[in-house]
Each structure stands twice: as structure tokens, then as C-alpha cells.
Length: 143
Image 1: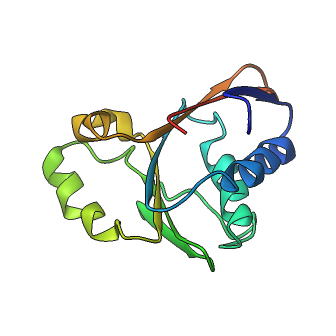
Image 2: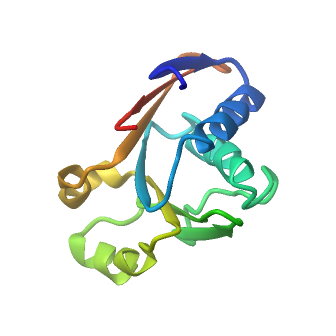
């Protein structure tokens, strides 16, 4: 079992933590990723994708402009979602996130705290805090 709070000191350590975390995640699942810009949310997703054999760290990029990236592995389909540029419930509905939720899916949602519907559902929440240039504090709740 991973600690609920950990510190990483490089992007590589954040990716490694994501790989270890993936071993504890079972679909279907919604994971809210919280943290300021540059906190390491996408870096953590790189490790989770590798942990699920759904994509390499090089394959995983921020979905800031496309809003949703999909990575398929043998145990799960990962959907990396970025709601930073989504401002209204109507815009959220047009993404069709409910259609992505299936028995083998894991939704990794950045900026989900902007929408009350995600606060009402039981989700895993991962908060990433940038301590300095390299150090990140990562807190996992709901596992």
C-alpha cells in the first residue's frame, strides 16, 4: 500500500510513483487530479499510463487543447481529460464524459474541481503541490 502523502524530487520520481499507483487502481474509476499549472498532473499520468501498459511516458501529453486523450492497455482504457478551458456545465456535457465510463475505464480528470458533479460522486482525488522547481507533494485520498 502506498502512503497517502509522498514527495517526489524529479519528473522521473513522479512517473515512478504513478507506475506504483497504477497497481492499486481498478476500473471503473474516476480520478480527480488537482494542482496548479506546472504541478505535475500530466507527469503523474505518464506513470499511470505506463503502469497500465497503456502508453509510454513519451506517448502521454497534456490534453489542454484536445480536452481528451485516450490510452488503451490490456487491463484498462485510460481517458486523460483536461477541463481547464471548459467553463460551463453545458460545455462539460458536450464532451460526453458519461459515455466514456465503462467497466474497463479510468477517467483521469484535471481541473474537475470546477464542476460540482465531480464533488458529489465518490472519486479518488490526487492533489499535487509544487514545493520548488523539482519537489512535489502528492496526496492521494479515496483509495
